[in-house]
Amino acid sequence: MSAPSPMDAAENQPPAHEQWKITLGELDEKMGVKIVEESVQRVVATMPVEGNRQSFGLLHGGASLAVGEAVGSWAAVIHASTLGKTAVGVDVSATHHRSAREGQVTITATPIHLGGTLTTHEVLITNEAGQRLCTLRITNLLMRRHKKPAAEA
Image 1 (cartoon, helix red, strand yellow):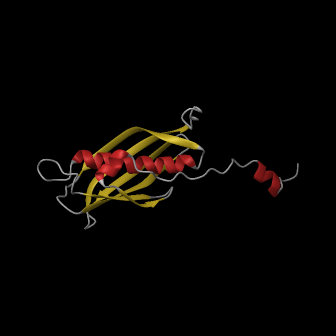
Image 2 (tube, helix red, strand yellow; image 1 turned 60 degrees about the horizontal axis):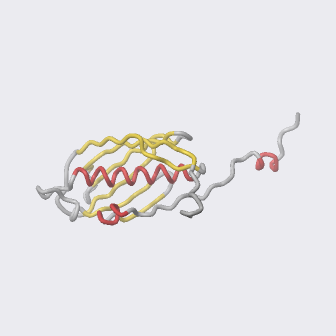
Image 3 (cartoon, helix red, strand yellow; image 1 turned 120 degrees about the vertical axis):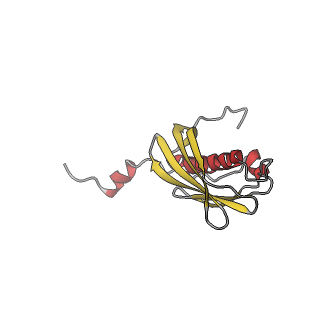
């Protein structure tokens, strides 16, 4: 048996898929989220503290969870898109280390595991001084994309 030619190897490769580009949702826009970087290996966004504070003047823990889950999910969908799939969240957990009263926070998602069925990302939220405010871990299930019915397309 002879070794496969480069042409044979190319025929056995899965089709290339276009990498998904982040689009903000309504909540992301209301929270003032801005995308800084997007790739399979790293998604970075920023968000102002102002407008996302709770009644005691601190960055709301729910705002941290919402933006952290969004950024971690975007990272998972970017990876999934390269496989011709999409991602849905199945678990998120967070630890709040400190808070912020003003300025801007940076949210960075990096992969812990990039599989064909599951992804897990660590999401760090830091203040302008680089101090860790919150650490999240999010796991997403990768699924095949469902085609939209013709009426929705």
